Structures are given as C-alpha cells and as structure tokens.
Image (tube, rainbow, N blue to C red; front, side, top):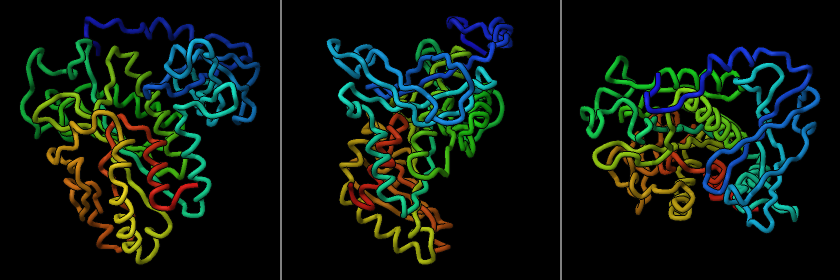
Amino acid sequence: MSDRHVNVSNTENLRKYMTLDQRGKVQAEYIWIDAASNVRSKTKTLSKAVKSVDELPEWNFDGSSTGQAPGDNSDVYLRPVAIYPDPFRLGDNILVLCETWDSDGTPNKYNYRHEAARLMEAHAKEEFWFGLEQEYTLLDSDNWPYGWPKNGFPGSQGPYYCGVGSGKVYCRDIVEAHYRACLYAGINISGINAEVMPSQWEYQVGPCTGIEMGDQLWLSRFLLYRVAEEFGVRISFDPKPIKGDWNGAGLHTNVSFNATRAEGGMKAIEASMKKLEARHFEHIAVYGEGNEERLTGRHETGSIDKFSYGVADRGGSIRIPRQVAKDGKGYFEDRRPASNADPYQITGIIVETLCGGV
C-alpha cells in the first residue's frame, strides 16, 4: 500500500540480508529527541548482547545539525536511559532511548526528560500513573490525508470513528504493523482505534508509572515513524492538520495517584482541579505547538482561554469519567495537550502542579 509517487524502501530485497549471521555482534539503535521534537537515531555496533543500560557506552552526535548546539561547540552526548527489543532487526539487537547532555556535564536545553525524572523521583511516594492517547494523521506525498480525494474532501465526519470498511478507514496495515512492533518492543500499548477525521488514528499507551510514561510514548512515536517509512506514508502529529470543520488531534492525558485511587478519591480529584486551574496558562505553554487552532471550544475540545472540567464532558479542559464519579475514586483526563506535545513536559508539569517543584 503506497502512493505511486513515493519512493518506498524495498523491504522484500532487504529481508534476505536481515537473516545473515551477525557473528556475535549486536546493533544498537541510539534514539534521541531533537530541538524541534523530532526523533533522531543512529546505530552503534556492540561486541556482545547487553541486558541493561549500565552496560552501554555514552555516545555523541553533531548537535549543530539538529538545532541542539552551535557549530563551534557542536558535540552533544547521548546517555542511554532505557533499552527495548528491536522489532525491525530482531535477535539481540536493541533500541536505546537516550537523554542529551552538553560537554560541560549539564542537560542539553532540549533535554526535557531530566527535569521530569527529578520531579517523578521526588514525588515517587505519590505513585503517579499516566495513560496517554496519541492521535495522529497519515499523509500522502502531497501532505494530504491519505485516501482523501486530490484537491477535495471526503464526506463529512460521522462514519469514520472506529470505522470498518473501505471508504471509512485508511492505512490499517500501517496501524496494525505499528501495534505489533510496539508489543514486540515491550511498549505498554493498550489499544488502537480509527478517529473522527478520516485517515486519523489513535493508539493508547499506559498505564505507566512516572518517567516510564514519557519513555514509552517517545519510543512508540519512533516505531510509528519507522513503520510508516517502509510504507511510504508520512506521519503528522499536527494538532490541526486540516483547517475547517474537521477534528484536531490531541494527546489526552489520563492521570491518577494514590489519593485519587483510594476510597473517597473524588476529594483529591476536586482539589487537583483547583491546582490545575490556577496554572492553566503555564500548562498551555508546554502542551504543544499550534494548539490554539485545536482548542477552540468546538470539535470535542475546551477553549484555550478558559479552564473548565466536568463529568463525562468532552468539551472541557478536564474530563472526569462517569464511572469515576459513580465509584467516587479513580482518575481524570486532561484533554488540553496537543498531539505534538512532549510527554515529558506534560507529565512533569502535572506532577509539579499537583505536588510542588523540587
């Protein structure tokens, strides 16, 4: 399945080489996030299989080519923080998620993980659980939603959400391939569904505890890009890829901690709403680029200028699920983050707002 104008990697030809003996060597794909919240990666050969990040060497890259360092001091260092089985190379080969550090021993300006991890560790006793719902859009070589009429639009929204059948869903092969790749890599992917706008999909990651949420979400994005690359289709995390009367794309963030999950947890949820309201605009500032086009108060969103919450309200900033209200405990859903937001910044500021900084 590919647009005939796209150069697609010839996977069948590649496959015969992927079965060759590696002579005991291991390929480690070092992955990091650049200045524009894109994933980058490069491969290092290891002399043997490894079981933990402690066995992996630090590496570096040219930060002037990724917007992370000036040309006259361009070395940025990669410090491994998590490893995952590689669903593309298989065997003992691994994917290595890294933090970026400057030569003076300080976190790179765009290393948002470091501060989030400090917050998570400082408030570990609260046992934060997160679940993120990643929406995205699949585009063809003309940057138009895949399967849409050229220079035109499909029928209005309605039949596409959780749709089945030709003309209702597009690129299910990519979605299924990504799902399986995530499962193989050990990502806690909990489901998928076609979204309201045709050629838009969602997958959910979680529940994950603390910093693991950001790690797994970023790794799942890397896998999505890599899978789509083989099909010649582009992935967009733009929160409003098509202007007009079409749904945007978000990164709805489900949150709970000890007090909200305990008996009488609704009191803790209500107290959290007051804290979140007081810092609404600080959250909006790190909840993704272009979010003002999505948070209009229409298309199942709240207004970017106003904090609101309610039970089962998909038009609010925060939705409290009806079952949670019935049980009197559980979690809440922050519907403000855009699909392109950084999960480290999202989860970090939520912990900071509800528990204080460090």
